Image (tube, rainbow, N blue to C red; front, side, top):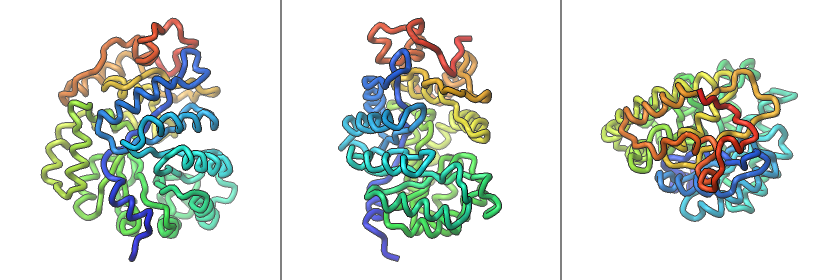
Length: 360
């Protein structure tokens, strides 16, 4: 089967570790902190990541556009930049795609719609086809299990539909979410790996999958949990995996595994209830030299939202120490406000609120 121009591009350039960038905010959380965002882009380059994805967490549609512009200005041409365009409706997703293409993004990240009036195979394919036709950008799919679709496939991922979606010329890959069923990972890769590049978020699956399939990227999750610029374990691991040197890749694999086991359990606990440990994610980034800062509070913060308390912070620091990663900072007031804000004299008492965080 001949590959489209987009799919050929992906096999040549979409390779390595991609992190997920979160927006930084002003002390009153009313606007984006451009300096903080720039600092995280610079640190992503220091880590050796080949790409950064602009996460939509806590930002409006218009702020997403500005966020994408800032990241593209700072990252291009040194890194690829992906835009997460998941939106409640397809019109906003396409609007964001058009903007991302103009701003200089190299690819986009698209998941299945969370709520569908007609959860059928035909409607799901039509959704992805319309997204694909609206842009020239290569598209990465998000492979997560949807309970609303389990009447069509036991996993909630419609493999037959994805087989058709994978034929679209600018659909280049799929991220496999962390708690994905091993059997489903096999079914997806066995059927679609000739068409798509798969990026497993479950690091423990990568050596095994790479023995049979082309695994050349991973990311769009808390990859900073496994390394620092001084100890780029995960980048080294993926470089070796993508080169087919699986035996050699097991050295950095085992070096980072104590940290991975902890972050895997942390993520899985919240992913299974439809959430993420947002403040923990920022703390991981700050510990290895990123900006940090607290996430913007939501209007209706779920009761199961993860709170970053003193014990959680100690556990994260301990895992870094266990794998030999030096911490870039220890002043947690700096984390709370963000590194760039702290340098401007801003302190925790200047914040309008401290969401997802406990000093105790």
